[in-house]
Length: 563
Image 1 (cartoon, rainbow, N blue to C red):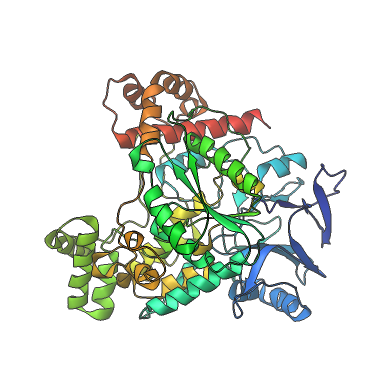
Image 2 (spheres, rainbow, N blue to C red):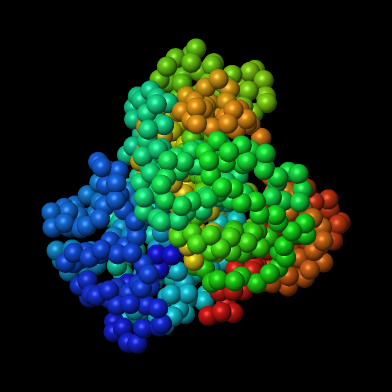
């Protein structure tokens, strides 16, 4: 979110403080915060951090031939030859303005198409768009219902009327709806048959990717949980010459105290570890949204954590925050039978039985249940996306919203399809933290080269031997403590959520039943009321669901009230 920029038509007028005019591209004006890194060559501007696919090093300068290749290919050249966290804007041969949001982890990018003589604007955050005169204050109940009914399926239609999101990897034309040819798709990287993976190859690729990111920043703070994924990032940062440190959060309850593992990683990598103790009392689930957003994001209960983590990064003088976010997904942590279906298709019955046995061990089930699941999935394919109708009314109930990855998904092998959809699940979390507005927040394990590698290899090998992320564990076992390599459990945060629900039942009831979601008929008022008054027993899933409704209600009110 630190990549704050906007593209708009019509006269600029006087810019708000902190914004800089970066010039025109055709009929569009480009403005950005003065601290946003950018490179311009003629009618093309690159904002953010990009790396070359061949060299895996910083892409420092737009050359004439590269600009010509981008224009001639409609942006597809950049999808194939660059990776990172960037927005590329250019003028095409027809005089139109186009942009590419980098695949997988590209910074948020939204568009309001003017239509009927209105003004158009593409922007990275709603606060910037509003500062330029766009109100954007009308929540869309149909999209909000869909976002709750199909959790974490982040499609192009946003929860604000008239605003669409340019999804990661999409190429779009300013003022027009829909992605253009050449946009990134996971299905372009699925190999048939899938390639056999190599722990050594994965090890080298992860190191190169993290090193490329590491070289872009002077001081880095790594958020180290002591889990496998953030520990792998720590192992890669160990060779870093510039200053960095690790920081781990410690909850008052034992389910969130992971210091034993984080300390072991810090000792082995030789990095200084800061330990941040969180308050015993849970945060306020009704706290107002601090920063306006174009889409609902995150749990409000974790807002105080966000404040503390940003303060720690500022105290250290960090100019980037690294994390292991997305490691579960990139390293193939699956609890479905889908990889066994791939094994059956590409390696035969024996491999399929072995993959089913691996799944049973990972999930704590038995082989016979796994085999029954395998047989059932041969007859009835799994849904492309889970549906959660709990506590919702039927006023807006509809089919799953359109997502570009749905097209062609059924043609992909089930394990690779599940791998790609697992990536889609994590993407909404990348820009959900307020600290990302102040300091670049980097998830190096979600980098495009690693994602494309994972899409192309045998999906069942990730769980080989009955260990989740087995390939990654083998790749880094020499650089991590044995306790981390063997670790299967993970810190949980239910100790924050459930007490907050119980302590705020009355406030939650008044807030939700007297709020916008209830008024628009999105939530089932009677069912929510029964759970909050105690007339019906609330499971932990019900509590988290109601807290999710609360976060959406908080977001809606922020959109309406701060416009």
